[in-house]
Image 1 (cartoon, one colour):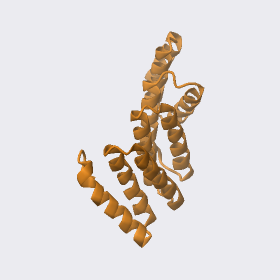
Image 2 (cartoon, one colour):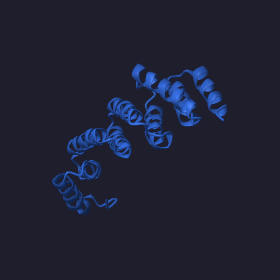
Image 3 (tube, rainbow, N blue to C red):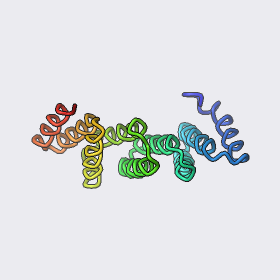
Length: 179
């Protein structure tokens, strides 16, 4: 993709998608759709970009491409979050993490989704109970991977943003104890 040049990237992304679809290369088709989705959004068509990313995610799941699942989910999360749609971004995070785990994704690959999830949770302390549940899930999995700092930092920020000083301080303490 030609970063920052969506008008120039559009024909290339479209051509890549068409070619991959024509020859039945599902992994490449999913990758092309992920790029096309970002380009469409950068050109001002957010809904078309989200639709392309949703299709990319579905194809990546079906073809067993862990990288494709993570790519599509991370990009879709980013677009939703920057459009002010945090609740939807968190739902995509949950789906993406679940799909990646079901394909046997190693922690190194899912960390991108974990960190993006933590960023959304940090930025939106009023996201609600579903966000709190997702954060608890993220912290539990992160501790198992011995990488809980982003998740516990998000927990602290969420607590602080809601005026819950004790929970924020506890999360900060927990983050310091991660090996």
